[in-house]
Image 1 (cartoon, rainbow, N blue to C red):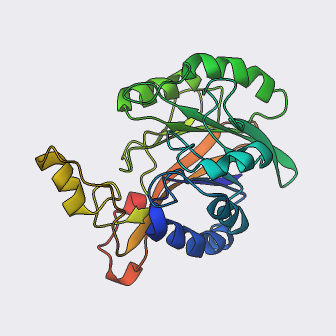
Image 2: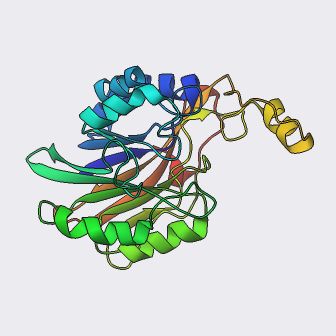
Length: 271
């Protein structure tokens, strides 16, 4: 099974690039399943029902969210009614929506779990214990389990990867908007990457206009966050998974909006 997991889509530049690339990538890469983190897709914070449905119509099988799940309150009814839109599973039980689902995929089933870290993040229940509670039920239906771990601290992400090693197929981190270079297959067969990176404007500070970001560091008068403009790139990971749930391979991807004008990618990140 060939799976693409796409890192945080940031604002209009990120979502327009994702909308244009996803159908082509599905065909050219012979993808079986696509997961997109789109919690920053609406002006950099949250997602609207219209944008969520666009992702699902343009090639995403599942859309995951994170700490900005509730920034656009109009998303709440869709969270309740659209099983392919997931907020973190370790939010309190009375939070709207769902945090995991099981989906058909070419005669098999794939589970997707959205989970959020606790270090330097908004309050959630323990992701480690939440995973322990969910996985026995999920594995009754499938051993192919993809986890989007939306977290700030690299230490928490790495610990979570090893905690789930052998129990899930993939642990892919999101949230920091900076792709890490530590893709690997863990000892018990789980594919791991600390952060998928950002799908959004290249010349930015994690997707924000550089002058705005600088003013927030240099002045006590914080400026309003504004999504940067200009060319974007899509950051993702391509993962191959056996039917028994063990990962066979993982490869980082950085796909620029204008390939001919972009600096050459390293061999390990080139499509």
